[in-house]
Length: 85
Length: 177
Image (tube, rainbow over all chains, first blue to last red; front, side):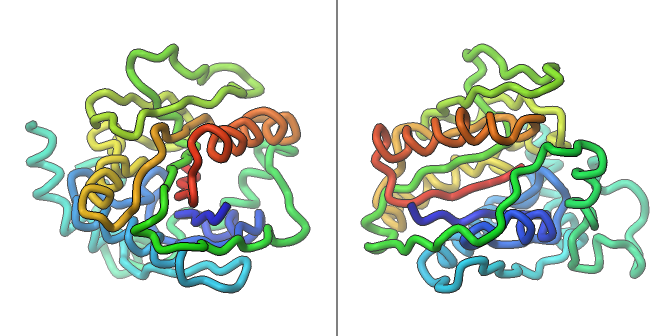
């Protein structure tokens, strides 16, 4: 079964030796970004699916280098709007 | 603002660094919960997708502890862990789901479950034809437990059997919370 993991803990993922993973430098519990930031959530899912199709070496860990500070700046308004729904 | 936003951001702030936000997590877990982690001496062989994503049926598996609000909740208090797994209908709406897990911060995921369990983004990709389909059910469980061998025999093997035999998945997206 082809699998792809999305991880925020690179050292744990390296230790448990998964077939392929996408690493994000984000807090635990925020693997797909910030609340109500649909574009970013979609971007992470698509990056993971692309890796599922393209990776060839077991243990591949691909970085998606988006800083958490930038995510929060982008998502601040979206999250505040979403809280009111 | 949430807990992840507290304090002013500066150049020295790890949130600006682009590296693992909680460093040395592997060491920390093994120190605090000795014997709790599954260990592998070699890489799991890399299975290849034999067809395009647009023709593939995908499942989603996460240790985030999400399930339908109408389900009996996962046991977050048992000292050794809850060795059950939950089926989450892939057509479920965000408001139908709830998280029972104590071992990671889910205040943001409580606002929008897609932060850790991107069920609505996958529904959209399926409707757009990027994915051939979704399995009828997705899967979730509590990642924390103190008996990794029992976990492999029960939760891991149970999900693997269900994904292959019942759900007929071609591939899986994993979100280890």
